[in-house]
Amino acid sequence: MPSTILQNSLEEHSDFAAQDVEGLKSLIWEIRQVRPNEEIVRHGERPKGAVVVIKGMVGRYQNLPDGRCQFISFHMTGDMPDAQSLFLEEMDHSVCAIGPAAVAIVDHRQLLRLFELRPAVGFAVWRETLIDAAIFREAVINNSARAPLARMAHLFCELHYRQRAAKLVDESSIYFPLTQTQLGDALGMSLVTTNRTIQKLRQLELIDWLDSHIVLHDWKGLAEIGEFDARYLHSKRPLVFPR
Amino acid sequence: MPSTILQNSLEEHSDFAAQDVEGLKSLIWEIRQVRPNEEIVRHGERPKGAVVVIKGMVGRYQNLPDGRCQFISFHMTGDMPDAQSLFLEEMDHSVCAIGPAAVAIVDHRQLLRLFELRPAVGFAVWRETLIDAAIFREAVINNSARAPLARMAHLFCELHYRQRAAKLVDESSIYFPLTQTQLGDALGMSLVTTNRTIQKLRQLELIDWLDSHIVLHDWKGLAEIGEFDARYLHSKRPLVFPR
DNA sequence: CGCTTTTTTGAAGATGGTCAATGGGTGTGG
DNA sequence: CCACACCCATTGACCATCTTCAAAAAAGCG
Image (cartoon, rainbow over all chains, first blue to last red; front, side, top):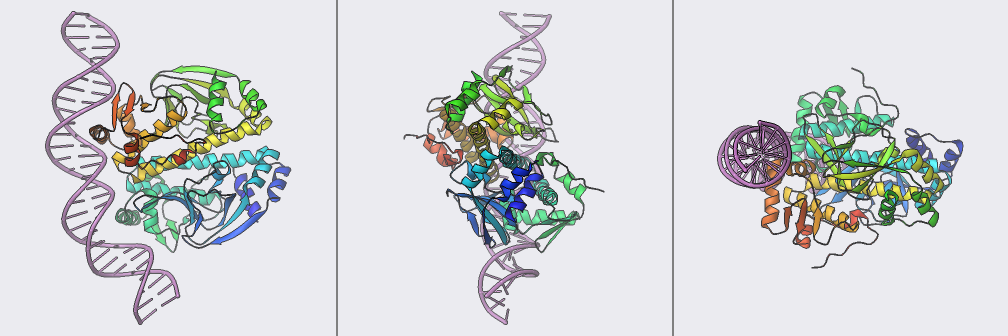
């Protein structure tokens, strides 16, 4: 099951030969259920395996000296949130579950052996880590150069796009189990500003937020406000948004 | 010469067999001199080759809809600022020279063939792109969660550390050919704030800035203000800073 | 039902952005 | 060689925005 999830996710961007798929299927996984807020990998650790998200959402973050927390990215079914640990020994951030989640862990050596045997699999995972980096670049831009409203709109657009591409949600919603505090910690803004920005998006009838789900009433409007241009996500088959 | 520069840079983090080095030496490069501000790769382009910085500094950035510009990262001798283009066809940002610079360009197919032949070379470049991503993560944190003074101090520490690790500068300086406007565009702050923040760092006798060089008077003080912890750069042999 | 967590609101204060003007330095052309 | 133009750095002042502090309301949970 974890292999299939990883395969589907990688095939979103890469093409495999039959033997590549076989190699993936031969991987041995350990499944782990995690509760909201539970740490999956800790800053400073040297993991021996790599994580694939099976269910739910996980976040990467760093604790700051003054007790605050900065979220760096969010990950959903099929993502490998700590793929970099394959080549960078020590974690430079932590990974935790946002809502309740399930992850699968595969031993690094097993994966590396597969990469040598089937370079295409390595290239696919590499590609995945490069898209990861593209998402970070966009986060730098988003959090450095956009005002709160645009910043939040952009994040919602990104998560929706990625979840839709992964076939996890319908055309008008995001699975979003964060608290407002966590959302603020991702966007680099205070809880109060976060709350008021959400209200503004609601007043503009762009979104609703209930029950760990954000409902998008007006994708196009949201994308415009957030200056969202999906090309940085490097989809092989870009999603189209009618209306 | 470009191959040697790339090799030295990669060997900072990875170990090669003799044949790996031979493979690197066999690469054919095209050299290009660039003036300050000259674009090297353009957002939206589909480069057929990858860039290695030979001399000087280059920056990655994106132009924003309102005419501003957000710098994402800076790169020095030995860096591959657009390695992601090996697997992500379309550029999601631009690359330009900061001061006068020289770059070498190597055809993608040539490199990919080498990766299949000598996986260790591919892994080394992969590792390089992962450190790149780690730098982006830190930039997200820096620009989202730190106040101007800390933010600027952190950037200076990072650049100094990387330049020292690459043996490009002495123990107390940074090659820094940016204008204040560009520095502000990197840190997500206005020109005025940028200028006043520099002055504060000067008043605190932490730095001087003249002639495209920043002089560090007090590395430890700067690192403390910037909350700089070099571990995210994943050096194989961490630099030590006396005093 | 009581306790905790999360969301919401109000108000005051700090900080950074914008606007506008000045000065220094460099390069060019007359 | 000087005048002019341009770019970059610097300064002052005002204003908008965001943060902080504080508290209340609402929601979730055992």
